[in-house]
Image (tube, rainbow, N blue to C red; front, top):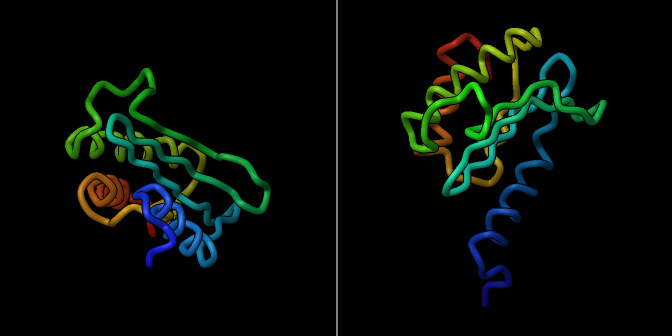
Length: 118
């Protein structure tokens, strides 16, 4: 029998398994994403200092789109711009237990196209 039955429990378990291997530093922060049905969030995190270096979401005032694939591509460009302002060139990608397809993949590809290396 499966111990973890809900989708949320399964995603959290995948995320914890992923977080054992992925950690961010000041030179190479962790790019953590969270995709819900209504919104999309991304943060550049320095795990050693325990602080967020930059963050974007579909709730930001500068964002004028929806949380669909096309909107998330625009959000990826905004994230890359904020990363450039914070002098972030390399990141470790943390997909948050979500599958690497759809919105998550579109966001990652948009950030890569703007010059941030994974």
